Amino acid sequence: MNHENLGASERIIQTLLACSDHAVHNRPGIVTPDRGSAVGVAWAPATYKVEDGKKVVYRLERAGKKTRKVRVGVLADNGYQVRGDAGGIAGEYRKAGLFPEVVVWMYRQAAEVWKADNEFAAKWASYAFAQEHRDLKVILAALMLVQARKGDPVVDGGAVAFHDDDYRDVGEAMMLLYTKDGRDMSPKLLLRVHDVLSLPAVAAINRELGFGKSARRPFLGRWPGAVEKWLRHREDNPKLLQGLVKAGFRRTVMELARRVGYKPESPAFFATLRWKQAQAKDGRRNLAIGQAVAAAESWEGLTEEAICNLIVRTKPSYKRIVGLVPKDVGITRAVMAAAIEAGALSDKDLVIATPTLEELGLLQVQDVRERWERAVKAAEDMRAANIARRVKSKETAETLRQGADEALQRAVAAVVKGLVVYFIVDVSGSMTNAIPTAKDYIGRFLQGFPLEKLHVSVFNTVGRRIALKHASAVGVENAFRGIVAGGGTEYGQGVRALQDTKPAPDEEAVFIFVGDEQAPAFERYVRDSGIAPIAFGLLKVSGADSDRAVRATAAALGIPCFPIDQRIFADPYAIPRTIRALVASTPVGALRAAATSRITLAEEIVKTKLLAKPPWAA
Image 1 (cartoon, one colour):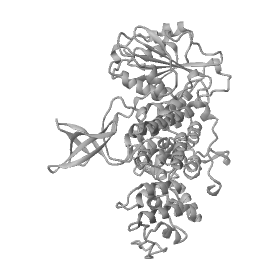
Image 2 (tube, rainbow, N blue to C red):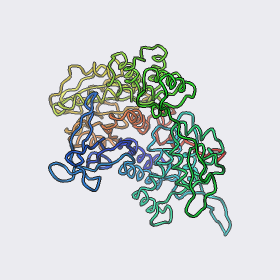
Image 3 (tube, rainbow, N blue to C red):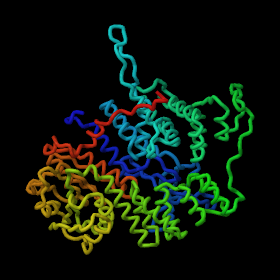
Image 4 (cartoon, rainbow, N blue to C red):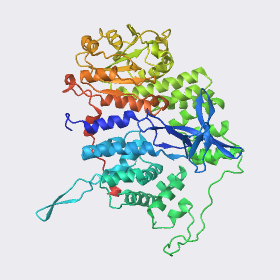
């Protein structure tokens, strides 16, 4: 990639950092306008209750360990508009499923990358496959399956000289490859790719780019063919199909088969899925018509002891256990212990189940405690920090918080080499109501950086260094103890407080500011400090719209300024991913242009090999 033209990588930065919304919500919600969001709207969980014959919609808000209902309005007859009690439309009630605004926004960004550099987009998709960002993976797989570079012959003088690159192969590979780390695409994600391509706004983008020929139907590219291969491989390898049924994907596999009109080679395919077949009106079907299928597995009527023995013997997934345990038995101490003994709970399942384990007293059992502690230490995201708020034991909460800290540190460790971070926090009078929020965000953010690579200051009209004794939420709380908001806003004073701590000759600096930006530019202070940062990060924690300070200074210095969305801190998956992407996308300056200890995200993507389909699908 030409370093003078980083348009494609800048789009990646925008996609990864500017949008923290999920592309899919698995529960109902309400969507309202939000000017601060990249997609123009915000989603919040919601429910409704029939009162006096009307469906009254309530937004669900977390308040500590409880959820409170906030009345929004009444659901209109059309089933989606919510009329506010004061009149007008208060929002739209949405069922569980795709969040179209986010999907379309992300797809548009990916399409812009493809327009700028086809090969870079394909390498981006190959890189994303190995990451944990499922929404982005689905978007890029969808784009690769339909984009125009598909291995067409290139003719020279009437003869085929060579074949063009086939980037649709990358999309197929994303759907067909299997990985042991669980980052491959599950049946649900394969189905989601179809749902993305079927959205009218996504179909319109594809028509705009010249993908497909139909002016009415959404273009699916190689999606049907890839699903055919995926299904055939599992029919040819019955244990794979049985494993999907055991894991709870039976209906999803059936839906994939329906959407592509899959024709199995043997009735065993239907028998494994317990899928009873009826003859089509045109009489075209010829397999398993009218044949009885095995009844769905049921644990109704079984005693607790019988269920525990069954779990240990058959080793089903925890998701399947929850679905099969009769309501009159429930997830008891014995059932949960049997599930853990059988290995039914993944590390992530164990972390999520912490409040249940605590309530059942299982964290007092040594074997269970040791298994749980290993799961917390192996966590890949910061969900444990959120769960820590819902447990009673201080010891358990501290273990969870420590696990969240370590997850973040592991996530960013590889990309902070050769980089020093200066964290500069506004504590002026305008931050009076924002200081508690800022401390919470800083606590979740700073723990990802080694102490020796981190320098912190606070400022109003005077700046001073903050001694951070431990890079954790507890360390931040201790360092900011006694600090209250007051005074004016002089960003330059925060820079001046750290100017005696210069990066080493082989290191580069990034300034991350936390504040509301209601202040003049401070270019002179940055130049006088002698630190020469290569980028700014900006975390705004108040509602002020002014951008005269940080952005203006970055522009005057000729360096990028990356916004950090507050909403990532509500998402335990987004925090490590966003911080890692922020650091990785920071450009390498002239100082380290020849060094190899740190490369940018764009450079890492450029070095990624294009995914290839598995041998059985080639």
